[in-house]
Amino acid sequence: METRTPHATASPPPIPAAAGLLFLGLSLAVVGVLGWRTARLEAAAAALKADASRLAARVLAWEGGNDRRTSGAHEIGASPQSRGSRR
Image (cartoon, rainbow, N blue to C red; front, side, top):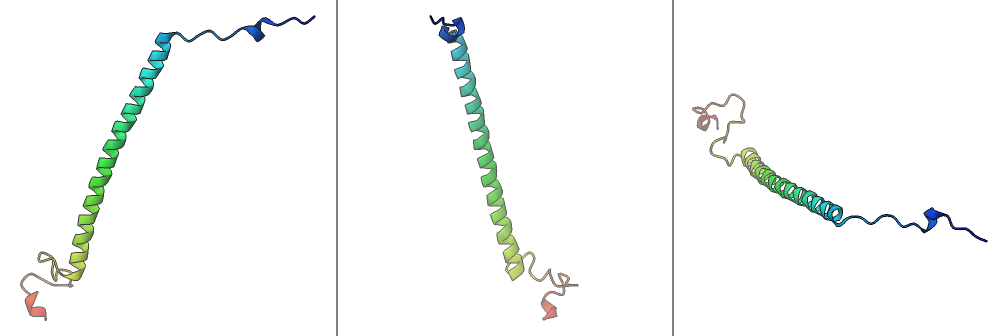
């Protein structure tokens, strides 16, 4: 004859409904916080990208001499009074 051991037939105790709801609520809170932080990081990345684009445009304009504020300022010894007379 075969005898069954008690642990082979016993099922795990059921999880109380309150513990399940608590786990579900905490999971949703974590997902919400992560989503909020991701949105903030994406907004910051977009702002940095826009700043980098503006900076790149200014650098290209400065290298080409098209920017009125810095035109000729890259020449060594150039002063505001002598910019026009150096040519």
